[in-house]
Image (cartoon, rainbow, N blue to C red; front, side, top):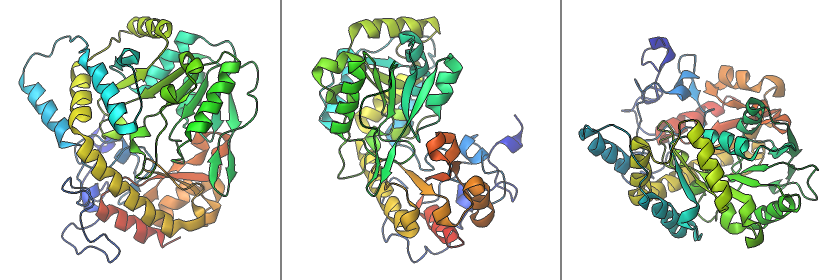
Length: 411
């Protein structure tokens, strides 16, 4: 890979800290105080030399990349300190899984979400949630089509195609209050039902009742509900996140799996890890055996270091982050108004109607770059229901968010 594939600081490829002069006065609409409470969320954040894939998408001078779901904010100090401590011990060989990590995950769910997760359900995986989902699908080997809503994270369709599994997309209903899950019986025959909660791309938090009802309809057909909850810890203040395995009817719990990770929550996705909550002991054994077939075992040196530091000590950083994200969400939604298809209730993703922005639906991504110097994800990447939409990531430092708001005035 050449240097030009990475983020540069010259005029050909400018980094975050050079989007705005850090010494310049803050714009009039900037917050009066640091919403990061000492964590640096309202200061320029320089990602030069880090090989950022997000910034590699901004292939023109001065473009601000807002497409990839990766925060341009400094991660938790506790994670950095834990990695530094562990790196100083020069034993980098194979590691075993620390059983205390399962209890740590269960304690996190109890403290953060009021969810009673049995530590025995927890699998601590040295791979990202995408890999975990792929291997889970291969483990259950569905004969019927996999089902998931649309618009939806494009990884579901991609994984099904890669595994050679048929799939069917179920259109979400969009009303004045935002999206709602499909109602009524599921198509038969029914394979595993995949769900992202909070919803990617809109940031909608599916309610406990909606999750419970979907799980019940899947269970009627003997189908598994797999809830991808990697944005679940990023639920905005005032919202509750229903954890699928503890939300479904206990009679259906053996047909529910939750996938999660500290990656999105604590901005450390570059060190892939995840945890699966699998109440059914037989499925846990089968999934563990399938993972071993790919050379993946519970634990992992860096993975455990990051997971434990984040869950033990990262809560104050996360609370400050959520306040920062809620403020950024409000500023952007106030500016964009009716172009926001569904007001986000979690995470840092904004789902927009291209036509309402005055952009041609078929070529909105390119037009946004040319008019505003802002790069977004094309809604078509999220299935048929996403055509004519754009997804923006607003997990940005305060000065960069101010620049984004200024540039949106060009629309």
